[in-house]
Amino acid sequence: MIELTEYETRTIQLSQDESYELSSLTRGSADKTQQPRVIERLAPTGQAGVYDIQPGPYVGRFRLRTGRVVDISSRFSFRDLAALLGLGGKATLLRHDATSAQGGSGLMDLIALAFVREAERIAGQGLAKGYKQTTLARPPYAGVPAVTAHLNAHAGRADRLVTTTKRLTADIALNRLIASAHGKLCQLSYQDKQLGVRLRQLTPVFRNVNGREEGAWQLPMLPARYREIHDLARLVLDHRTALPAGTGLAGVGVLFNMTKIWENYVGRWLRTHQPQAVVHSQYPILLVDIGPARQARADFVVERDGRPVAVYDAKYRPWKEWPSTAELYQLFTYASRLYVERAVLVYPGTEAVSRQMTMGSVLIETIAVPLEKATVRDG
Image (cartoon, rainbow, N blue to C red; front, side, top):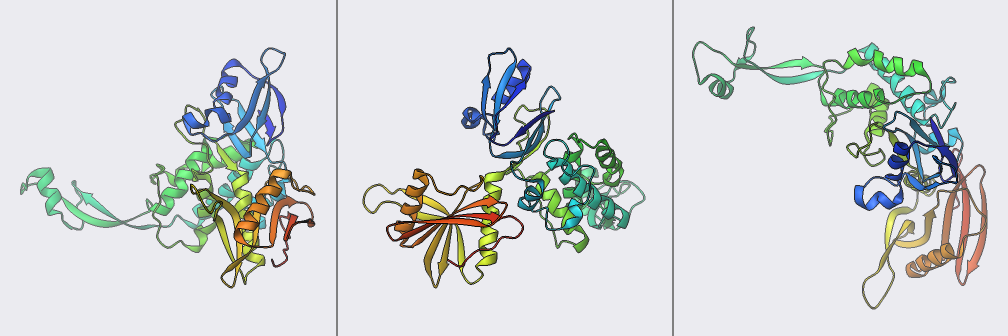
């Protein structure tokens, strides 16, 4: 296994095929292949076959064509990572000491473990069922004659029969979603070998369910007992965060864009702690008054009584006391264009700390937000 940490450079021995495959995931290949920029930098060293590898803001695991697994862990604690991914809300997902954080990031082990435990519970209770329209061209016949199908299949022959009926089946959209996620998880490798065994043992449960992954899932009302496994299945199958299939990579892996996940977390944090305000995401800001239109987007703008009062920018990196010059220019521009007097940079942190400075009439603040006990002042 190649164990990396996001944004940290490590020196790794690679075969020629492995170096070529990883180079296809660098930022230079993004325009041609539309793959995520998983690797920021891949550079040869003075030794043959030895490379410096720096991953980008992606956390997860995928397999190279040689069979070697690349595991990219988060810079932050495992508990913080689980909270960011939305897996920390229910403690049952974090109570497995054998695999939760041992070796590499443990990310896929955590997701697969949560999925297995929920799937085993669902299987024990029995899969949900629904009625499916079925056409029967062989005895025993049930239901009512299907005239159109009869004409198409047998030209209306009197000695043949085609009927249609509704039959109770587990092959419904909800179970197809779960089966599809199960199939994807079965293709990954896990540090706890027993976890792979438990996944394979669930295969007979979905034998009569079409687990072919589809572009969109139209699901009816969700039963309460399916809610957790439904969310986990969506997480596994989410193409916005998973390495795309069909790009020449042999394995199927899940990679989470932590920059986007942190941005989503900050949005939830703001809306929770400022319930009386309206929080806008990706707020458009016109940068010029005269000339060709130039527009920027602020991560979040807080609005009260119909007018903006503060602008927030989510930064996925450890908290730093003072913004860079470029960040100061950016925040001051946003605040000036919106006519607000407060601009805030929000970082993940282990404890709540903040620093303030002013540029003219604009108060610029850097805030570190503890992931599990965040508080915020009203803007």
